[in-house]
Length: 267
Ligand code: 1HE
Image (tube, rainbow, N blue to C red; front, side, top):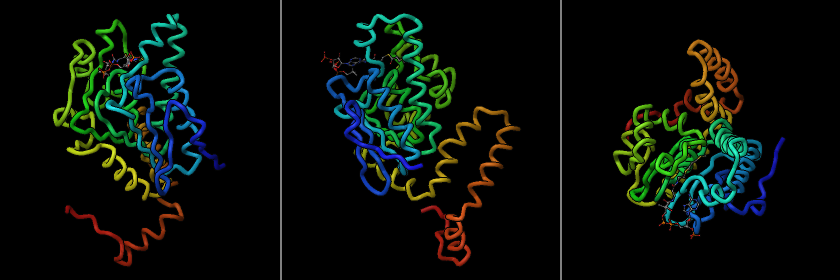
């Protein structure tokens, strides 16, 4: 089944197709530093629910203005004066959005700049590749605000940097940026220029892979991390059975066999 994405359906996000199946999704509330209110999270759910079935080959996720994302909309949260159950359901919608990203099978490349904090870091952590520029910084300030993370930091940030560092960030509000942030695992790339430009180049490159290979990479690895090693090996074999016999791969294999296919060498 093929679905369509209609950019005019989105208000808190700016959604646009750029080229050959690469889409740009921009958090578009720069006046609020792209804080995640309920409406934005619903639009993320909507986009990432449809994207895998709408021919989207890769996504660049970015933020408008000077910051990627300031996390939970603290004003909305303050004004709503939510009950525990109500906020639990808010968090469940965040998980719905971020799980759709991480497990949807479409490469998501986050272009990070400025504040990537609290829920903003949780959002970025659900992408498959993160690119930071020199203005980007990450932090989990929830503890200082009388809050706790609710959008997956305990899982995804811990996956990126380990338990001890995550707990330190949560307790002290420690901020990381630049090469140190990359060395610790927050991002795979650091650029002097625009993170958006490099994120787009990376998205274009991933879009050249066959969609079924990207599906396996951008859902299988995460699913298999949740399994026992024994079950993960089994699931990997089954997935490889499907992907590695796809008819669309035959031309690529033939190119290797007849020596026209690229050889893998360091530059
Ligand atoms: C916001 C938010 C927000 C800005 N919710 N409205 N996140 C935080 O603790 C980060 C909170 N934000 C900041 O520390 C700063 O805003 C920034 C460092 C990101 C940017 O500073 P600056 O000087 O450029 O902007 P500003 O003057 O602080 O804010 C500009 C406007 O954005 C202002 O609104 P205005 O109507 O008065 O102009 C701010 O109120 C608004 N704004 N950040 C709502 N976060 C599922 S649990 C997840 C838990 C969390 O994510 S906790 C949140 C952590």
